[in-house]
Image 1 (cartoon, rainbow, N blue to C red):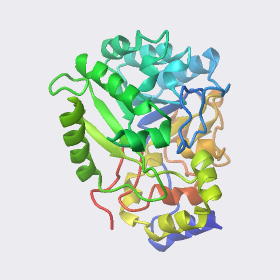
Image 2: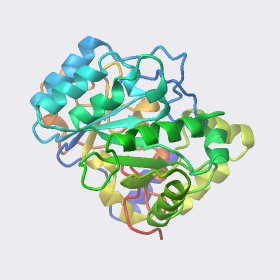
Image 3: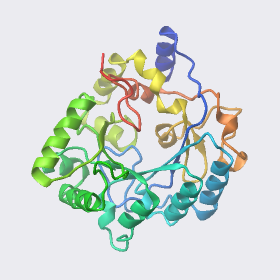
Image 4: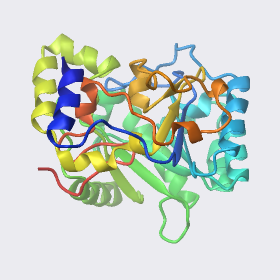
Length: 326
């Protein structure tokens, strides 16, 4: 019903059906293995997950990337992507091609045994870091991500700052990500960024470049929490009622292709977690195409969760898609 409702909503505003422009970002989900198990996680990742991208799939991703010059950005996610044995290979090959590489890091992984090489590797490869920190206070972070996670995150941020990340003029980009701790939309991004910079700077001396606010998507672990608390219908109503037509132009699916840990192609990471593949008639796997070019101009698969990306000020992997909510 909501799938039809989203498509009908786009049509009502003269915005549908959705189609991709050129592919500018290849997002690579290397698997669900993670050192954390956060309550809001749309991936349902955790320490016991065994889904992980193989070396053969990683090599195929690199081959397709090499033949896709418009894909200037490689966005590596998980799970904790750094736990994948092919993480270093993917980063190095992408950087050798001159591509911008984003690592979606949970911060605490930097403190895991055997991964002390990671921070220096980030610097050497000039990786852009986008790191999860759902609040600037211990209570809210530990509530969402587990006891002691806030303190570990601060330790990791200090380590990155010491290497130059987040420092003006260093060229080492450090972004933070905010997810609401409950069933509500994020506050205005610019105001919250100012709050984060003030509070983290005053209390811990932490510096960073930008804060991205991302709406919690009603899928996987967060969806299960909504169902247990009886708030699923209320939350979906919130998203639907706050649909903002001006967000559609900036939806990440319009310039991004997502590849799953086993090589399957999706229009975004959220579709991937719901196993909604690219529409019929298109290559369905990284092994079925030589470049990303066939996906340029292609239709985009949508469903009810897409209201999460179009509510309020919008939501994408780069935060808000418009400056202010309606």
